[in-house]
Image (cartoon, rainbow, N blue to C red; front, side):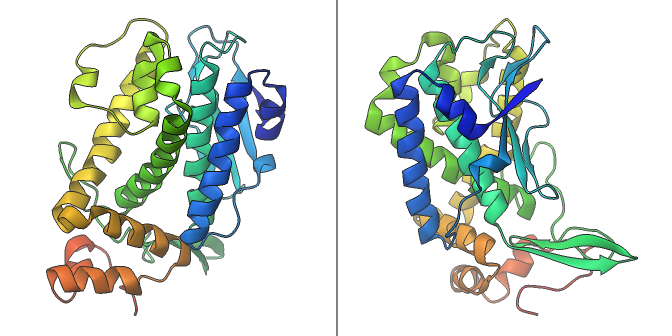
Length: 289
């Protein structure tokens, strides 16, 4: 895989539509994240983009294996959407929109509250966003069952909140620029995924070719993260889903859960956060203790 820095990738684009997608998206996410308490964005010179692969079947984009934010390196490793063995951009607007989603997503990972401690002579992360690890490295909440339709796992909640926000930003830009009409039929599934508009029937028929594994990863992520988070919001907030979503994001960035726990207490009774999320095996502190 050959990588380039994000700002170099943007500088080499000759397609003005693709440039405008990222320009508008970056402005939009800066304003939105400032509302959430994140005053700085992940520096684009800490974002490496995979732009070419020697593997003929390599297919890049948000669901490429092993891409994402690296906490220790404070850097993001992502890939451009499409066949990575082909230097041509089949759908420049979608490539830009997918990179915008990945960047918006990893900005929230980069900006989320973190706490580190010395344990057995090593530096370990004991808190991330609204999640904790105890001294035995057990997380605050237990993993969801494989066939779960909803979630009570804080890792999934944070990942779902992060990507819901990133996809909302991508969808807003796509609507402003009328991108739906410019996306070729083979790329429309990825467009719906990037903008958060997937339907359960979208995965009824697998598409042949190099993109198959990418679409399988997309389906797995939607089932394991996106759909579960959406159901979680509906179950705990009903018509106030956006209010709960905003409280989760604000708490992730600030590390202060008082607004989130108070809201849950009012809706579901005192101690709702603990009852909803805490695993019996977790031995560490609760929020506010």
